[in-house]
Length: 158
Image (cartoon, rainbow, N blue to C red; front, top):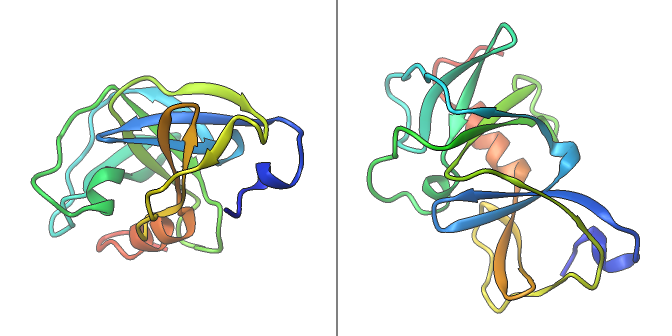
């Protein structure tokens, strides 16, 4: 398990985001803002995991359904509880921000190495790790993979 929490006992500020059957665990620094659900403009010819574009601070951000990138099944739900604006974490130049659709309100957490343990489930490409947070299985998203997928969407300018 290659998680920053494993190597030291200091606390890490995190956010837990409900997305379909997943609970996504991210460091707070990866989140720019959490917004109530608002109108999203559909984009033609995009995968079902892209709900469309969100107007935010003068920019148009692609909105992603994590559970549909992880397992491309069914039609994407067109609504949710809130939108989580993500900071770019890797070197995808054309993508300073993007958004995740959340089905519930994200929770802020402070975690230390004793709060998480390994999960028996093998991570999929969209996950850096699967861990247990108490008795709940959570996913640590592979932000580099997600950002590459989002940056390759048609109609996004770089």
